[in-house]
Image (cartoon, rainbow, N blue to C red; front, top):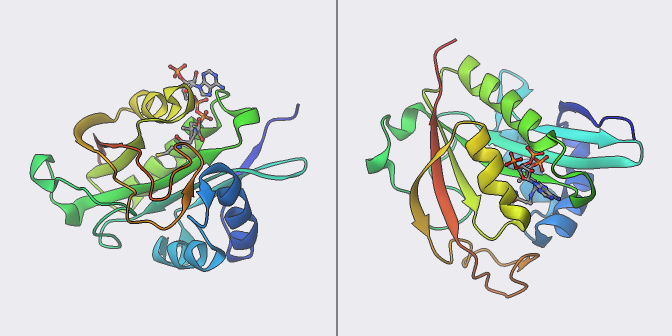
Length: 189
Ligand SMILES: CC(C)(COP(=O)(O)OP(=O)(O)OC[C@H]1O[C@@H](n2cnc3c(N)ncnc32)[C@H](O)[C@@H]1OP(=O)(O)O)[C@@H](O)C(=O)NCCC(=O)NCCS
């Protein structure tokens, strides 16, 4: 199969990203309006810090990232800035990354993450923050973030419980999955 092509996310991608998110994350986690709002929040000087990967039949993955100053928490409940080496004002946030399970384990998530880290470096971030999904299939979330240099700082049970969606992992509403908060220093450009 041809390698998926990675490019920046455009506003016109929002409905397709929402449809992919319904399938991969769970119904209602990312309605189109939420994708549009997050895309706008991630955009600096007309450039969005968000990416999609395209296969022959459409989108197969996406990654949303917020630059410093554009976020104060993730979608769920639990953040421990007191354990970070830099203040939240200097931190970018890895909001979400999902890859079609048929293509996972081929490095697409890692490539998307590297692009996001390069973007955060260009924005002057000194730290990247993420919430890893502890129950992710094959422990892929933790593994790809560790490969990108992230280390755990805290664990948040029932992290997504206040998001009204049907989780594709636990299949329970509200979600009972756990997030591992992870950080990674971002070296100056
Ligand atoms: C996490 C995710 C985005 C990583 O993207 P990816 O393209 O699969 O990333 P990689 O190819 O770098 O693989 C990540 C790790 O998971 C493993 N993995 C992923 N899919 C796998 C599979 N189907 N079978 C076995 N291992 C798999 C890889 O071997 C790799 O581990 P390693 O570095 O120890 O070898 C993607 O796997 C995914 O969407 N997972 C489910 C959703 C999720 O957890 N998203 C993050 C939420 S915060």
